[in-house]
Length: 163
Image (tube, rainbow, N blue to C red; front, side, top):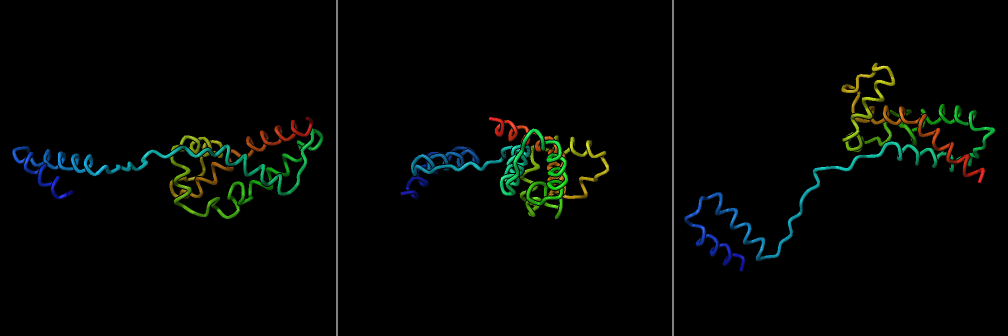
């Protein structure tokens, strides 16, 4: 049946330009066979570093059964900041990669170059991000966000504890 439609379209479009004939042919085949066109996703969603770091901090606090109160919050902040800065589960700084997968790190960096720029500025611009690779850039962003996210998590947990 498909061959019949191809021959029919060819006869109808013999006088048309070759490029148009092909377009007509493909359109008829698509319509007659009820084919579906799958469009690849070229636009990736922006990876949310802040929510990822916050979730990792919460998981660490829960795994280690840490209780946050208004009395221990400041001391706990310092201890957790020091500990999580080199934690592979939160920043990836100990091994040099959170994912241990350069491709995944590149996907996360896509649409987050502005955040990478802020992180490099914050750390004094001494890091040559182009030479360090995607995994190192991913770690730089996570380390940059750690303090802010840790403060947010401790505030949230302190409020939950008071309620």
